[in-house]
Length: 445
Image 1 (cartoon, rainbow, N blue to C red):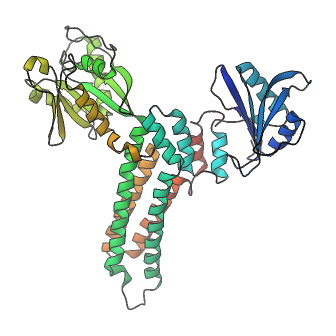
Image 2 (cartoon, rainbow, N blue to C red; image 1 turned 135 degrees about the horizontal axis):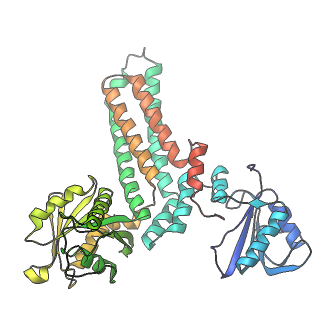
């Protein structure tokens, strides 16, 4: 598969529809358009046409639009055939353009070419896939902001500031005979500190962006009959989990995807945690502990009378999980629905059965997911967060080296931080990284 091949794919989802699109990109797109239209295709103009096979038999009637490169999505010549959305017709059209010199595209190959041709950076290319896969309005808007370049712009701002600090440091190392000791000037340390703070701000935004993209993994835990399944049903607003007075009714992990204030959540109802000789119940509790270990939020279902002793169950949650203690059954205790913050824990008083306080819990979950910042958030991926964390570590190391007057080592840490930032946008990249990223895209995009 040469990089200058002409590629083709069905760009609309599988299944029947009113309209289907076959997309072609590459050096033969113009010749294919001319052959199908029996005329030279003007760029960026829709042409009504009949599409025929090699024998001249009619395949369909529809619209064709030709985009002359570089004014196209991929930066190459691009042809789109808009036909009726029959899978049979679209497959026949795809076969026809392949007969005329194209080959079937790999997943994500159109977006990959847009990236390689400088039409998008790597963050924007990933945002294309995130926009297609968005599970909520907030996630879609966040993906659009990344596609529009908001995330990339913030990375470029950090990079430009980093280049300035590197230039200062390199100049100090290149001219050691100068009377002024540039390494000891407070401006250099101040600029490095400011750079570290800016990196931290973007890192926090990227972490929220990952939640907006992937959703929040919320695990409900507690002892048997604490109301876990009732809570799941109340949040999902449907009877998804079986609720009975018999302890141990839930024996396996039950998942439900919901959208709360525009934020996608995966709710996980788990088996009650207790001592049991039942092999099936033991397996359910083992799975519950596995879910808790990777939870973004751990919801402990309890009541005011047992809250202090049940809190010990939270040690199964991962270190990074937010902890929310749910004082359930306030319809029986007579307490008022409310939210209290005690240290790092949040206490929510509610009744899953009657619905009191459920709105408060939903608001708290949305807050934990960054919902209050959703108006200006951008989508991000785990690899972006990991890269920014590595950048932050290099900046911290450079500050320590500078304090020890090890200028050469500080310069190397800054160089590595610069390279890591380049990996986010694709300035520095490897073929393996591109292969992994674009293989997750849908065919035709």
